[in-house]
Length: 421
Image (cartoon, rainbow, N blue to C red):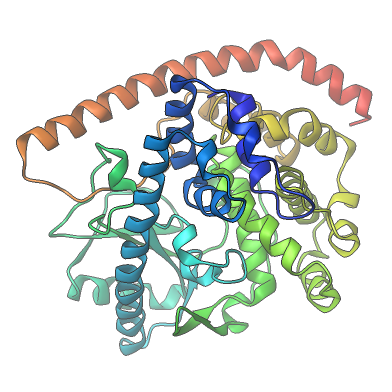
């Protein structure tokens, strides 16, 4: 991906001050824009970018055929959201009918606080936090509605899909936005998974006692308290950073929220109370807030800085300044420099050695959208070919990025030492 073009696209999405000039998008070749289209899809920025270009009267700065694809993606996604709202409401009613204590996470729970229009936020599935004592009820309720659990070893979550339409990796970009996309239901019973990242966090234990009724797209459902929702978004973003796949769209969500609530002193005092007991939580919030605000031009409000960026160790500040923005532009998927950040957050040396060993050659793949199954032989073969190509590319990426990490380690040690870390 051409980094100058990527930066120009991100500049168009600035949320404070003058946005980037759309004319900075001109002068790039066909290959640059083809790569940019894929990058926009994977970053979760395709839909808000096309919408913003309309506001800036800059759609003529994008090649006409690519503009046609972006417009079609937005129209397709609007149809998908309309279907998902109905399906989401049905799942909520299913849980409520079974007496299940739950909170919706991400997705529609973020509208309008983190994104003004659900159609501009690429959504693939439904996430729920379930009271642990109600997990069996939730499993049985989903089974009664035709969902089956995927084979997934995650210790604090379970993924369910409709048994009649198991998801596949998309074979074309259109399937990222198609209304026919098979959706998953992911159940969580903890907000953090310390086993997978080696970072133990003392999180509030009363989140299920503080739920609120949230209304989005004319439907009402239980959601986390606003302070806990923000804390979850911070932790969710960090987890993806540490797993080398964090969509830029996650930072756009956070930047929008911070900008929208910048002057809400009462909210930030309440959020401070939720993280006050843990300096590590405050530092993690600082890293994530710094990246979101830097990428999308949002000044860090003093109340936010007081509980996050101002508490960061010099080594963390050095990491976000030296590696943060460039890694984020690549969705943290172009290198493994987030391992330097990871080391700062793991307190135990033995745990760190295990984390590094598993991180340099992981066996999972970054999250990608699911696509509806098709009986067509050619479609299945295309999907299999895509999956094989993807796997080969990931193997090359892991080998290359491990070498980059080793080469960069000496420079990071010097940078960390000079920062006083």
